[in-house]
Image (cartoon, rainbow over all chains, first blue to last red; front, side):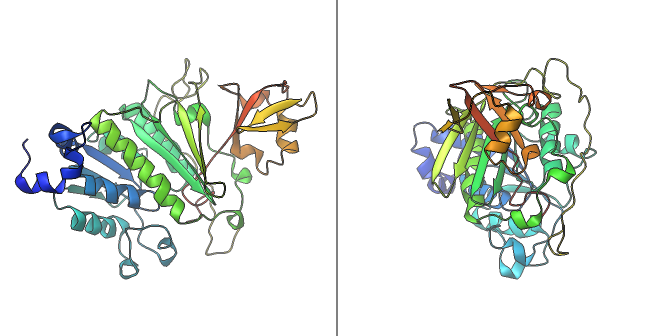
Length: 271
Length: 73
């Protein structure tokens, strides 16, 4: 692959970076990243990955844009309400950079579809909004051997970790299984400052770009936590858990399965 | 005794178990927290039996979704 005149101009601020250069930009253009979720985290990470010239971006989300999404899901606009999120986000990514090949999956990730979809990608960004989906992304990436960026945001805090299956601490090393349903706090304790999605989502995009470029140190074996109230980032060093049910010495999870998802419906005013 | 919890020095009574520590530290949803002590993730089954020692570096690791605690989006 060789860069066109217009690509050289578009990506000039990358190309002049000694760690990127024309070769690095070509790696990005050949790169394939899957965004699981086109919401709070997926929107900012996808916008930057598209701008960066990641050649293929997969977008997976089964939802349509809702008014309550717009406070943080920055690729969707008021006019997009009712539109499938994958289509709304893809239109913005395409507008930023027509170089990018977009693959849309208007569906949830499930134990049935995960492995066949993941197979085509180099790196996965977990932008899901619930624990069942986060465990499924972690398990599917483990079985598919795909590196991924896990992240979560809540209230004024966020966290992220990158996992290279078989090499670094995985999500289940930290959190063996989803919390019991009765342990999950009610909706009144939830909520998130919208900008947290931008901070953490762009960190995830950074990890995807570093992975594709082969530059720097990935956020592996470290959990990055961000406290917006204190304006403080910390990294917590972590070791692989020998008792991890997924990647430990004696794994008990040997096939992909869907975890149960605690139900909590804000609009219905419960629990 | 002194320990570090999530990077901050904390003064604790001697002899606390991890279960008691979660109460003393007013962790609201203990089931939503994994505990790492001195770089090792603790098995939840040992929370009652594990006693915190002076100088321990303790990290509470929280489950976080994507803007919702559960599927509240």
